[in-house]
Image (cartoon, rainbow, N blue to C red; front, side, top):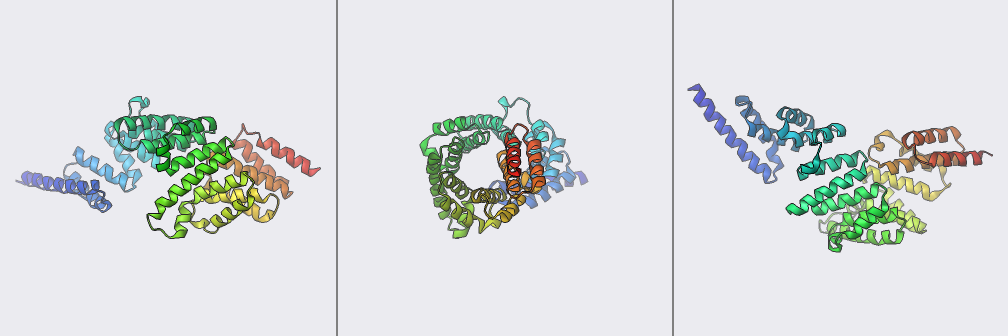
Length: 360
């Protein structure tokens, strides 16, 4: 009789789990905590119930409880390899996440290929990230799952950051013009490719497309003007840089000043780039304030949020400021970091030569 009662109770709990699963699939985040609680009640009676274990794993991932999700996925083994890799990625354990995925990704799912690309992107292996995003895009296009456009954008972003401007520009040009109009991220990344090639006028045109498309999209959401400007921050900063390179320093300075007025709301990497470009625009004017900005850009918490190219530029500008301020020891410290982090860079030798010339 007790066994029969337990079976009835288990069936009732499984029905409850199924109900919450359907609510979660319908997009109700509120269903996740009660779903997790219901899973625990079922597992107390049937610890090996496969469907309930999967539902619990999904809950843990969606609730951001990645440590617990990784431990459970490890117990579940091969059927949960993607969830384990994803949890490890979210925990900042990129190498372990990559090892959790299949060694041969040619037969992997689109989700696994995309995750592998994201891992390589975070590890600054941008060429490999571009290859994997391209494979994911091709698979998405063949399956018609609607994510191909996003992958195309990621391919272009990876090529831009790989510093292969010719490949990035060529790939961007090969994409459909209609797709570019719909995807402001794509127009932005194509602008970045033009910047990498020194084609600043073409970059300005693409940034205008991106800004217009993004502003129209945000306008439909009826956001306050300041919030719109914050959302446009990365586009505005890049447009200001292009103005700066084209010699319109007044327009660049005005844009940087506007962005700096709400830097607390900007993404930290965008705010740092604005500060760095402001320092570069000033030259040797207002050196002490420039040094405050440059020093803040060298803070350890910021490093992980920067691309290698940004980090190198920040270190180089800090070293050059130190030379301009006649602080040789400070300059040596910055140059030492540059040489250590970027051993192939010619910048340390150039800065040392500038420092020696100034000391004469």
